[in-house]
Picture (spheres, rainbow, N blue to C red):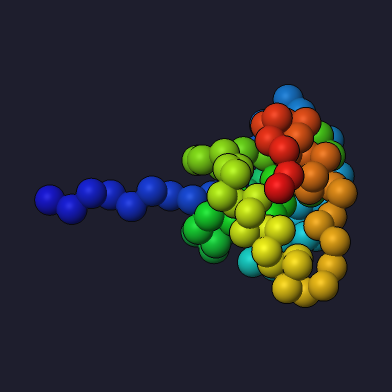
Length: 106
Ligand code: SF4
Ligand code: SF4
């Protein structure tokens, strides 16, 4: 029997979420949606890109988690990505990973 594939999608901590919609506006895959009352929810979780944490560090309330945390390897890839684009790593990202995970930048 084959091992079931891990389902990679965000989970919103409702006790932290302020319904600011930043995650919805950021995600290019249309993963997030709204309830009629304006609550932000994971609507199309299957469209989430495996290993992506993009919306996690956009969230000002630290309300989004994934099956695995951001790692030093992920940070190295992000640094490489922005370096190739000739852009600085966003301070939103550096502040988030330092604050939430205690990870330093190379
Ligand atoms: S960015 Fe965070 S606080 Fe804002 S709607 Fe998304 S999960 Fe909620
Ligand atoms: S991790 Fe990436 S693809 Fe998945 S919901 Fe967040 S921004 Fe969208």
